[in-house]
Image 1: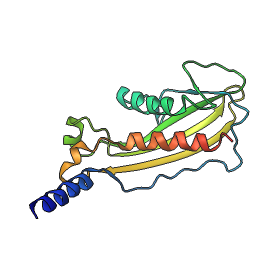
Image 2: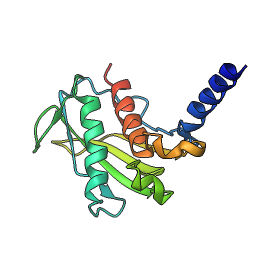
Image 3: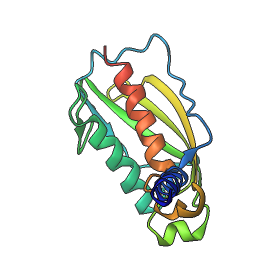
Image 4: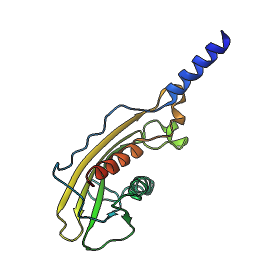
Length: 169
C-alpha cells in the first residue's frame, strides 16, 4: 500500500510540476502566402512595438530559438542580410512580456507571459509576405513550478517557426 501511495504522490508531483500554457497560440498568416520562392531568412534583432531594442536576454532567447528551429529547413537563417533575391527578413516585435513570479527568474525560468507579432518581408522589395501574432501564458504548475523548464518566450518562438514551416510547401 505504501508503494502505491508513493507512486501516486510521485506522479502527482510530476503532473503539477509541468507548466501549463493557459492561452492557446494565435497565429494569423495570409492563407495564400507560400515561401517556396525563398531560400533563406534573416532574423532581425527583436524590437518593441515602437521599434526600440528589447533586453538582450529576450533578443538572444527568441532569435536563438527561432534560428535553431529553422536551421535544418529550406529557409536556413542568415547571419547578415542586405537586399538579396530569395531572402526573407523576419522581424519580431515583443508586444508584452511579463516575467511573473520573481522566484521563477531566480530559478532561471524565463517569462511566464509573452505576446509577439512577427512580420516576414521580401528583402529586396520590402513587400509584406506574412504577418503573424502569438501569445503564451506559462502558469507555474503547482508547488514545483520553479522547475517547469519551459517559458512563454520558448512557446511563441516555436509558434513562429511552425507557422513559417507550414508555409514552405
